[in-house]
Length: 248
Length: 223
Ligand SMILES: Nc1ncnc2c1ncn2[C@@H]1O[C@H](COP(=O)(O)OP(=O)(O)OP(=O)(O)O)[C@@H](O)[C@H]1O
Ligand SMILES: [Mg+2]
Image 1 (cartoon, rainbow over the protein chains, first blue to last red):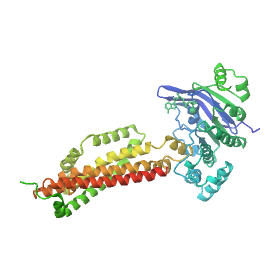
Image 2 (cartoon, rainbow over the protein chains, first blue to last red; image 1 turned 60 degrees about the vertical axis):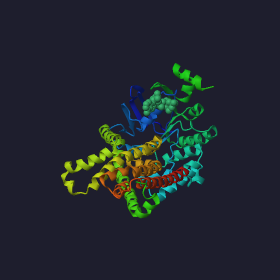
Image 3 (cartoon, each protein chain N blue to C red; image 1 turned 180 degrees about the vertical axis):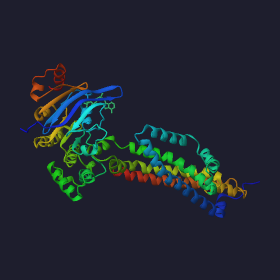
Image 4 (tube, rainbow over the protein chains, first blue to last red; image 1 turned 135 degrees about the vertical axis):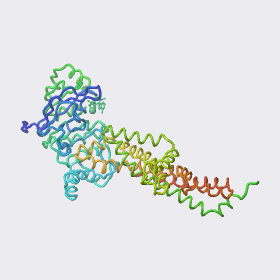
């Protein structure tokens, strides 16, 4: 087991409103280095919003996000520098269609980290090999399947050497036969010790991979615990209700 | 009084005048759209900025220039600029009319650029920013290269529209196609120049539109 005592990300009373709509109603959580945390919950409960607040894609309306000891939502914070350490993978892949597979991966490291083109390409090739895409190096993303695009998106984030990876329903937009390939990559990553925060509707996967699961409902963490605690002995009636709907 | 000389006779006798008018039209339209594009790019940035005050200013600029007739704008430029800015008195009157054309074009171009940038999926910006890319790198390396596919054909269409708009400049004696009508009316040629001018406009716009369509096709292939 990995020692899980260093807090990597902490939220303190995190709140987010969209206009009059309160989407996050005060979430205080700690994510430890090396931890794999999955977030489950009903649609519209605020899972994506919570995840997107962790790297400030959504600006919190109240509370704090502290990453590696730095308050991200402080005016003086150099957000770009910290975002480089927080990889993110989206449901819709968001690969860059005007760049080749290789360029998708090398662009940010060369531009923002000052890595030489040569080194960036060498590393990109290794990453592509890791996810079985080495033959696609010079293709444009339009030639890739959904699963391949998502694996590209994952290694694009990894090329920045992040300390944590955020996944927002990484397999929800995929054809069923593509799901496993992507989940395998995430699992390998988690097993290699990468801190992961994963929003998912794949309950089996959540059960198997998580150190801890958050059940977010109506803008709060309604329940949290190990997979065993949450799936076998849910305490909150809303958790029970939700699980009864998603588990057959 | 009969119809007078036929179209072909007039065209043969006066083709240098029409040619010069056509070159003038193409030139003024080009100046208006290219300088209008530079100005329009700044207006687009103002309209896309996060500052509400700047957004309001930009919206006023665009709405006024698009909501009032170009001819009125030209008259205002023609008569008001020399009064308001005496230093410009020595500048040729051609420049005042051109300023109106440029400002007018910049309003339309700013909307073209804004629309092109907004047409790029927001997920692209989010992916770039989540990698820690700066706002300006995100714009220059991710958003603009994708927006340009929509912007370029629309800009070309703006140039085609501007070819027709510049006909108003003839009112102020700028030597463009429509001005040839004034020149030839002095020679008692009333109807022939009008048809010749219309035919030249039609050929110009049709040929250029065809060019734009093939440009669009090329872009959509590379999608
Ligand atoms: N940019 C936005 N503007 C306005 N409302 C928003 C915005 N983003 C999210 N919301 C609203 O916030 C609420 C929570 O959305 P969120 O995407 O966080 O839910 P979720 O738990 O991820 O749901 P799902 O499982 O469907 O992805 C929803 O009611 C949604 O409509
Ligand atoms: Mg969501």
